[in-house]
Amino acid sequence: MNKFKNQDIGYGNIRISNLKLEDLDSYLKIEFDAFFEKLKFIFSNRKNAAFGIIRSEIAKNIGTGRYYNAKIDDRIVGIIEIVSRENIESHIKEFHNYFKYLGFHRAVKAFILTAIEIPKLDNRTIYIDNVAVDPNNRRQGIAKKMLSFAEDFSKRNGKNALKLWVAAGNKNAYRLYKKFGFTELARRSSGIAERYMGYRDWIYMKKEIL
Figure (cartoon, helix red, strand yellow):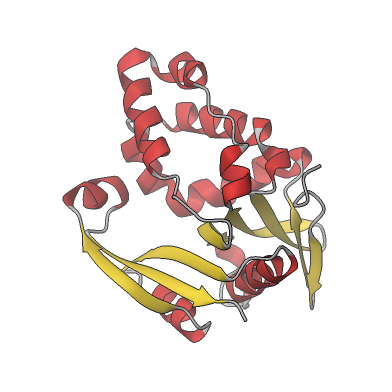
């Protein structure tokens, strides 16, 4: 039994819960609005192919307890991925899905780059990925509430640390994480990351869960 499947918490007017299949296209719209520059490099600027691959992969893994959305009045206004050792180990990733949309050479590139994204975690750590808020609902504290959800999730499931990477140039996100209690573990500079995500300098951050 997947202990992460039935997560559902209210934070004022916002409800955060596991992503459901019927909400997947709304979830992906927010993801693509926020991260398409990164996805362009991975998927050779082929937006429809990227959408098809990611949609298929999330649908196949929707029950792993990795994907969550924040809703106001049943409308998705934010998304977050909560990555644990458990849902990494159960995650299904199939090359033929990439090949179907991209052909062999582009599929190899995209498959390798998306595999590199998967962090190595111990049993007590949560990695936070792909935090994004709908452009029409920013500056309403939604991202902070999703971080609170990740912290509460960690406490409920016996985890003692949250970790994430943030671009040094993404000042708003960096300030949010600092205010939420994250501290710096390391800084990295990478030409590949600059091509991949548009930022050369990255900060690895951690928050201890007490």
